[in-house]
Image (cartoon, rainbow, N blue to C red):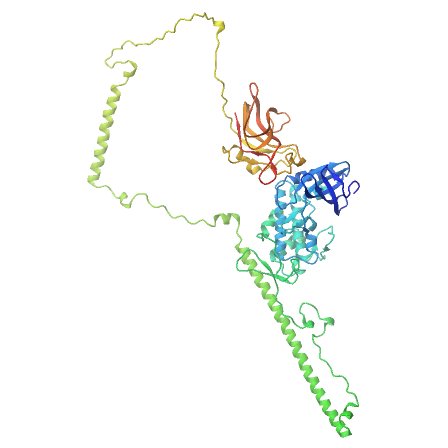
Length: 631
C-alpha cells in the first residue's frame, strides 16, 4: 500500500517490519511498538477510503470488549494518508484455514474450536457487535491451543458490508460459526464467496453434503446442525444458541491418537464411561489383501481374485523327458492330468479366496454398522441426560417432610379438674393485682401538675430568672443572629448506569451496584485499556447517578481505590452537555469531596467523569470507583 513499507513509523511509535497479508483494501503488517517494546500487528488502509471511518469506529468499539477469545485491538489512529488499528501479536499461531489444509480436524477439536468461536461471538453480541464476515481465516489457534477470533466488526466494515438489524446480524454469525464447524470437520467451505486455501464443498440437490458424507467419525449433533442450518435454513438463531447445543467441549486442545491433530479421516471417537470429554481414537481395521479393501471399488468390477488359467504346454517338453513316443504320450498324459488337477485346485482356491474376501467384507460392514448403532445409542443417552436450566436448578430439591410438632401430643388432652382450678386461681390473682394497680394510679392522677384531689387548687409557683442589666443599649434594628453551619441531608440514589458516549455505552454494567452498596471494599471498574488515556480510543468514561427526581446537590463524596483524574457534574439530563461542573480532582485516591458553590447545583443526575486512569493488577488501565455519596 502506498505510504507503508518496511521501516515506516505509524502513529509515532509503530515501526512496520514485514507485510503479512494483502487484501483488496487493506494490509496486515508485523510491527514493533517502540513505546512499550513489544511486537504488534498493524492493519492499515488508505485514510481516503470510503469505508475508513466505519472501520476505525468498528475498531474502537471492538477494543472495548475485554474477552480472551477475541484478538485484542490495542490502538486506533491515523498517520498522514494512512488509517490503521493495532492488534496484539500472536507468534506461532495458525489460522483454521492452515490447520485443515491437509484434512479435517478430530471431531472433538472441531467442537472445541466452534464452541470457543461461538462464545466469543455471543460475548460481542451482548455488547451490540457482530462479525458478519466470518471465515476460517478469522479463527486462530495459538501455540498453547487457545482459540481466538479476529476481525470482529472490522472485517465487515472494511468490506463495506452494512450491518443489518440485530436479529439478522445474529443469525448471520450463527450460520457463519456452523460453516466454521463444517470446514473444521471436512476441510471444505460450504458458503459463498469461496475462501482462499480451502476447496469448496460439493453442491448437491438441496445444498451441500452433510459432513458425515465427506469425513468419518462426525458426531450426530454436529452433523445434524450443519445439515439443518446450511441446507434447510433452520438451526440456531444466535451464536449463543449454537454454543448451548454443542456443549460441553474440551477446555484444551484435542488431538487424534496415532497421528497429527488434523489427520481425522478414517477416525472415530471412543468415549470412556459417561465422561463429558471424548478423545479421538483411530479405527482398528484388519489389513486384508490389497485387492480386497472394502473401502475402494475393485477395478473393472470383476472378482477380487480371478482364477489363473494354465498356459499351453510346449510340444517338445514330453519328448525331452521321455525319449519315445509311448513314454512321451505317457508323460504328456501325466502332465495333462497334473495340469488339470492343478487347474481344478486353483479354481477351488480362487473360489475359497473370493468367499473369504466376501466374508471379511461382510464382517467389516457388520462391525461398522454395530459401531454406528452404538454411537447413535450413546448420543441418544447423552441427549436424554441433558436437562434444562430449570430442571437443573430443581434437580437437588427433595420433598420436605411435615414439621415436627412443637408441643407434646398430650397437650391436646382436656385439662383435669385440678388444672382447671389452678388456671382460675391464677386469673383471679391477676384481676386483683390489676385492680389494685389501677386504683393506685387513679389516686395519683394530677399530683405532678399541682392538682389536689380534695378539690382545692393550690397557687401555682413559677421560677423567674432575671438577666443582669446590660450596659450596652440595644435597638430592634441592630439585632444579630448566629446560626450553626448547615448540614445537608443525604440524597437517595435511585440507580446508576455506565456513561460511555464515545463507545458502546457499556462499561462492566454488572458491577455498577457496588458503587452505592455502602461497602468501600467492593468497587466498580471500567473495561481495560492500553494506557492511562484510554489507548487513544476515547476521551473518558464514567457513570451517571440517577437521584430519581430533581434535587439540590450540595456535596458529592467519591471513594476512589486508584489514583484518577475525575470531574463531577450535576444536570437535568444524563450527559455533560448542559450539566453544571461541581468540581474536579487530579491524581487523587481515597475519599475525595466535591462541594457546590452557593446554594448548590440543581439537577436529577450526577455524572462522574474519568479523564485519566491508573494501571491495575491485571496490567490494564481501568477507572475504579468504590462508593458515591450525594447530599
